[in-house]
Image 1 (tube, rainbow over the protein chains, first blue to last red):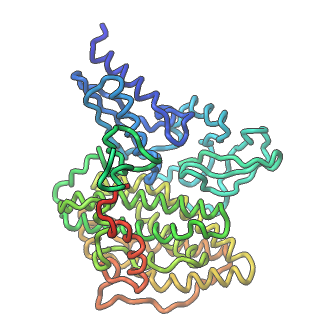
Image 2: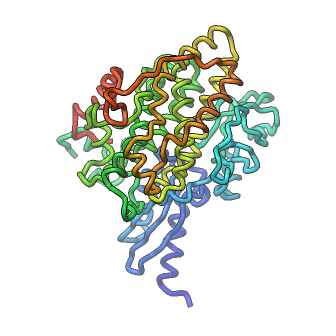
Image 3: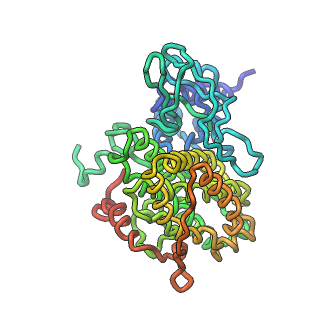
Length: 178
Length: 296
């Protein structure tokens, strides 16, 4: 038997999961992996747990506001948004659907087999300095060419790097690994 | 709808609900919803001071890097420096919020950033060095991020869950910062005679202030003994190793410099700063002090 609380939780989770990222509107917060948990109290209350991508990501405030507004509109009277910092968000948490959406919108999804140093587990040892551009499998999201080069490890948002295609000459963004 | 104060019209808590004028207004407590209970047996004054030390380093370096926006040599580097500054600002916000809640005097991150005077800041003097010279910025960013990464990587094991969580996030970010500075050091050092000289001159400005990073302040040592902080004297070996690795690749002979000592045993961590610092604070704090009711 499905209890009222379970049904409530399912509805609340569906609403929360459908809220999109303000910077990357093709991704829901669930796709991005920043939505951790949705619980209901049984008396119209709902608690949503999210985690920031980067420490300084200004989109976090927008996410909180959007979640609050959408859940209030859905009839929940006591909406609380919790932030959880640990474990730290990782680009490997982006869902398959999220990766497809990024690629379709011209942003190359992160390559989890890359040796980008921030994505490497050092087991608590020192983080190695590589001095080489990270090895990544990158195809131009527009023309599928593999002749691409990195122009900067930083782009318009903290989570992306900047690349360009040497065949079609178009610049494109790369969602980098952390 | 009329407002007594222009800032009310653009603030997040707009009486009409969700009408916001632009992205990013209404920054609230970055630790909102995080369990910030202080572990038993930890001295709150020491913990607050330690959070200020690490938070102020990030805040002041962030301010210096932000000065490059609109005047860096390439658009890509302007964006990179702004990104690095934003990461550091995010770390500073969490650390200052933590300091404010632990000290229990009702000061939030903004009160700590904008309404403290020079002697109340706890950052090392190195981050105060003027910007405007990319060789010096590269040297300062390499030194600070190498030191900070070594520290944060150990701080992940802190017995304070909030410091541990902040550190675990920041490690990933500062890894990218160090790579950026190190690659530029190699590019400048192994470039033309002129670029190599500019890098060397940058290090000549920065290296005199390096020792302060490793002095092992009394607050650090007490908290390290309690398993909360990292004793910075332990970081020297890793730091020297990374700098030597970069110097070798960059064909750079690190200049011999005279170290800047403390002032009667006091330095940045005790609120004794360089002559550059007052000007930086004046700019950083001017808006908040001119209009204390401003919100953003």
